[in-house]
Image 1: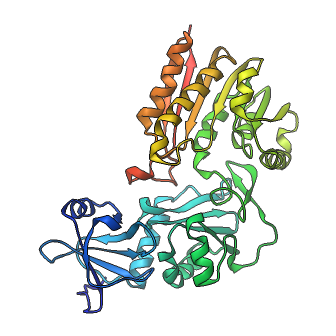
Image 2 (image 1 turned 90 degrees about the vertical axis):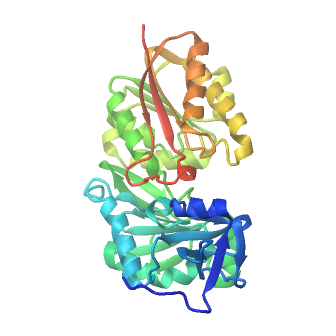
Image 3 (image 1 turned 135 degrees about the vertical axis):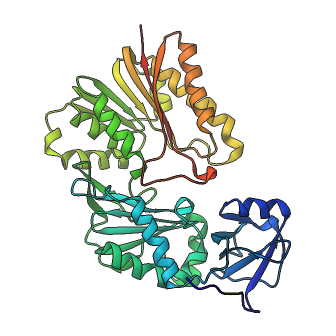
Length: 403
């Protein structure tokens, strides 16, 4: 790596003292209201160099004039030239963190997890021979010419699909003539891309599906559910495309019931189920219903209940409402749980902390009058590392009723 002092034309930025401290500690975000001064207006994707109060190099990052998150930091410390070798090293570090996870039985994996891998605002997932690049800031587009060759060289995909965060879709279409779901490389024979996870066959809707087409982040929890399912009647609430349902069936469940509000999700679940002939002998009920409403009147009893709702707090102001909703779901679920049964409650709401979420569930347990043993609290999968507190969204708590 070659040291380089900023050129006179470089976009130079100075921050408030508080923001300066935060960046020095390694946080990758600089918000617009934290910028004290800059030498000129910047353009999307331009490298902005941040100097401290003593006019010393502090950091360099991608500038985004259209976002309140104005700079996404790529490097802090000593000044460096972000050349081809630097990008290659950054990518190789991401690959090394996932060594051993991509194999003959699992070829659905996250290779780049945004901020936590040093790529703020960019995610890269692989499904079989297809890569999906999801981008959350238009600042990345001037740098795709550096990134795409690395993806092709190291991962050798058949195709690369572009997915865009909703807030940048209009700007990217106008400026770069690209749309959500466009192909950046290769050809795609089918929007439903087959891939393997722990030896099970799944399909990812890489063009229109949520996230990049599948919820890869719940892989480790699905494996835990499989280990708990033998001999049990399993209820999968907010089942979506059926990940937990398929694992439970393979794990030896005597019966699986899946509930989701959308017809499309249940069709995807059925497609995934049929792609695994080994599950054909396991009875499986699919119920299309609003889970909150369904729980109000549901009858029956289950040995293992999984609750994995979509995010219930998309904004900070919704934290309290979400916590109460998690408590209500858990409390209603307990009514359907057989004596000695197990509850698995999940949350993907970044604005609700692990402590807030688990306490909501624990409060529901106490309110039920039944006694539960806490088996485990889990977080992010190994290929979804979390090194930035704001990105810590996934949590699950496992509880078993005791006599």
